[in-house]
Amino acid sequence: MTVEPKPSIKDVGSERLAAWLREQGQPAFRAKQIREWLYPKWCTDFTEMTNLPATLRAELAVAFEAFTVSADETVRGTDETEKFLLALPDGNRIESVLIRAPGRETVCISTQVGCPVRCVFCASGRGGLVRDLTAGEIVDQVIFACRALGHRVNNIVVMGIGEPLLNLGNLIPALDAICAADGLGVGARHVTVSTSGIVPGIRRLAEVARPWNLALSLHSPTDAGRSKVIPPRHRYPLVDVLAACDEYARLSGRMVTLEYTMIAGRNDSRDDLARLAQIARRLRAKVNLIPYNRTGEGICAPPAEGVAAFLDELCAGGVQATVRREKGAEIGAACGQLRARACPADGGAVG
Ligand code: SF4
Image (tube, rainbow, N blue to C red; front, side, top):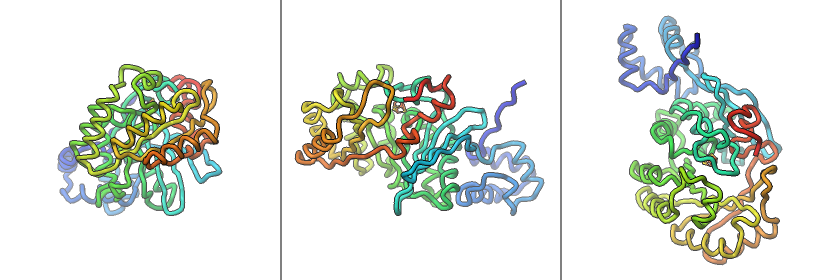
């Protein structure tokens, strides 16, 4: 007989929790007490909720999960990067990465188990989508990182396993809880949501008008180039992607960032450079050039001098651009690599 995992208490709406507390004969103020333990105090176990009656703590533990992630493996890099392979209550695994820099501690979180987009160079997409993460599972990755750090992270990037904009129904409430003053209290302007270019998702995110940053993984500045990286099912015409990004920048008031993974011979020609500069100027977007850092795909980054020349020309063309090294390259911090190694059936070979 298989035992159904219990729901995360963070996924139980306030009305349902209020009704559940009433059924247990508990006063309504218990809900506020529970929330205070779960969010600002990063509590992971109902037994720690010492201002609740012991009977209530026991009943909560029977009905709900207080915390949904546990470390299966932690890999530390030499560059202050820690990558966590996290187990979920149903046995699935995800990854998150903690990146420490002076005054800026960032956690990169996942939004799905696997990914339906299946970009050709990405280990996360190899086995397709297993399931969406719940809001509670998304929040718990941030709490896990805060606990590992001993204090609150100040930067969140939603760039781990999964396409965030295909799980907005859970991501939006999760980020709201992460940013709420009575939640985890992370500044909303320090949240960046990444997408491969899911047009309906960008438009929906624009409509909810939170001050989160949007990062578009462009991969190539042409439809032909993007078609070599993103399979058709979740690929949108570039003209629509850019129009949606325009709308996002207008409604959110935030700058869009273009993430550009540089692959030798694929997207580093003079033509690519000119088109990328044109797109960046149109969106008034900053460009992050990310030299491809993985092996085993028969593709590689351009030589360092080629990356530097590409950067110089972008900047000379009036584009704000930087080269960003993928932190934790030596520990396989690129999206999905650790999970792929741990769960070859889901993630395939390591990218
Ligand atoms: S790069 Fe992002 S969108 Fe593409 S398969 Fe990997 S996780 Fe999914």
